[in-house]
Length: 153
Image (cartoon, rainbow, N blue to C red; front, side, top):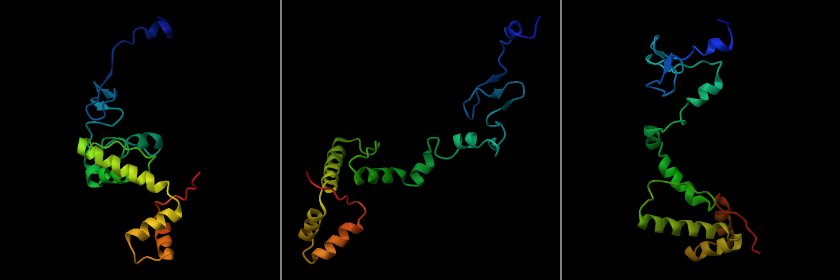
């Protein structure tokens, strides 16, 4: 038989199967070792010469079941949704009808504040706090990073 195409028809036995740890078809049945993650070795297989492969397996590429709670990402995502009207974040915490209504109201308020001019925002602050002068109200508005100077048409 020749070395080429006709020989490749005989390659019909699988040497690799699915890995329990990484889920890829890289677990060698005879050697009993995953070519991708080195299962059953306790440490993951990685090499410095393959930076892209290291990025694919890095923190944040999976579900992050524990870290998401530990870092408080759910709360941060909710705050980001309120900062700007154009940022849409789907969050599982706000699924109820009462929460949805309150969230819609907060987003509408944030949109209204984003489209305000500087003088309108200063007037609003001064109505809330009578002791503020126009200069201090202006400096407070500019100090808060959420203000956008938008000219009305």
